[in-house]
Image (cartoon, rainbow, N blue to C red; front, side, top):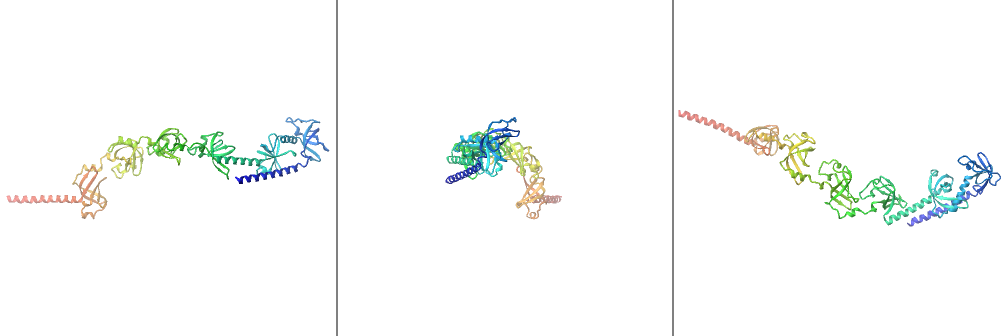
Length: 558
């Protein structure tokens, strides 16, 4: 503050010095008392283009007739009239006089009589001319003032001509009938005043009223006691960034508080929300996770929706919290703007000003409804919603169950993507319900006999069959008997001799050890085959032996 005061003193001292220089320059310009002196002249002759006026010189002064001609083209004076003129120059020692300049001088004299420098004289003037020292400016009454170049506060003098500006009177010279004005002084005083206003706003940290001057997409410019400050769109509401055009209009009075001032940029930041009670403080301790509240949908986005609690607090409803439907594409299919809905608070953080809510949490849970209506073993009709590489999801009773590829068909080569398409209605069997993880497993192939069940109708334990080796494992060999009918020969059921000679693709003969058509399993055995063949051979031998003994007895009886 001390530095600012020193700068102000130095500036004012420099201004006084400049004013003295201007006064001296003006006095020098008025040393010629004959030129620009106000004189009462007498009209002695009127001609077409000029009027001769007796000004007490060797020859009459020459006045352009256009200066004393009305709008109808009539000369407004006659011979013998006394009119005010000033000598503006000489031509061949004949004075050139001006009536208009004289009238302006009269106005200047009257202005000087009724005004002083001490008054707060701020004028709106138009720049009408320029000279080496500065500008000639004129107010709406036609009174001329002198604006020194250094007091114009402009770099390019040519840009000033024709402009209307505000100036302040800094010197009145009654003797020379001149008035000096300054634009720079006015700007300096205005900056000083604004600095004082800003300093007061920042120091007092009080709520004041301001007038909205201009609304933009990024905020509003508000006039506070003659100082313009910016209310950024993020400082309008505790909800977060909002569109000021939707809430306010230019000329409206709003409460604001100064929150920051950038001295280098001379930028004052204001806040409307800081001028109001913080709603987050009001709900602190009154609202917690698990509470159900009523809100209004204020804005819907592709990723969710913003909801208004009604007290300038906005919460976020994520798309995943709108419905139990996992395939929700657009929130607008479930909610609409300005709709009042009940939601559950799932997260609240007053410090970080974060509130998350859930709509689906207050809605009936589809899985609970499913459990009431469906059980393991039930056959149901559902619609395919999604097909993946591993299977298909089928909607049944508000939930989605998984039909895995291996449960879609008994043909291992068929996959869901080959059998179905989205929105197909299919009949399936519920084979598993995982209550804990809320998962349901479905099967379509269980609705028809398996290839093994069909095979079991024509085959039985002990049958000798021939198949093709499909795979060889450490624990045994898989044999394909028919299409989609596989059987297993365990390692212990292989002959040691044949085990070393087995190859994938080779045909192999074995006996059926057992068929389990409930679990769709067939076991084969080469050992059992060997035993069966041994038994058959013994039967044949025994049969031959008995016939020989009979024949012997028969012969003996003879």
